[in-house]
Image (cartoon, rainbow, N blue to C red):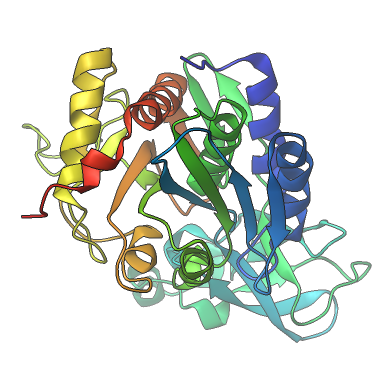
Length: 351
């Protein structure tokens, strides 16, 4: 079984600290290309910017397995220069506006430091303080010496940290998936043909994965992502039964979400693999949200697909928190599953 080493921590830190807001994934793409080229049979960057990688197995009756993660992260786009270093901006991806005032950001290719500013509380009315601050009233402020232009992306300025059994960073969603796919490429088993998609623009509509799945035309697919863990204690006490996933519970196997009814054969297969290999796992509670599986499973004439995600708290915010053990066990589960895949897995009828 693969395990997490210092080298993987260094790679994850490099990826999380990189800026790759949807549609501008070049910095992360460059890192991934450097990592995958020595281990792949083919590497291609397609018209949308997806990194498409193949690693062929050996022997007869091999299953073509697509593994997918997305490179992009949520963030901001400057839309108007108001002078004196102030810029109006729009959100790229799902971000809660309530969390933004006072957050530090990095703007553009040169990573110019800035702050998201709002009127100070001293100058607001009681009525205004009861309401959510509208996005139109916020500005990114880089000061009069800063140089930026409309169209530039901005990301949260959070830097990667390790704190005991936890990791804290921006863009854990989905740089953890990127590191896992790179490790799976390096340890690819011979019984399958691996097709790896490091996809773009997931946060704004699963766009890259749709193109990647059409290109690969796989027999089956696993989307590897990071999923919110709504596992904080309830304010009023009692058990939190709406936890979605829990930190420390292992990889989260999806049954269904807003975009996908995951293939029940693959759900059972992953659970059996975890049981037999004694790898902890959990089932993501059904509900909203989604992964690239929502686009992959509808490609061409249909692709049997399942999602597996690393749970983390505070998703799509300036800093998220995940457990190292959940990352390690997600890598172990998918690695063990790949070695057990045979054509018979897909020959039973889907219920």
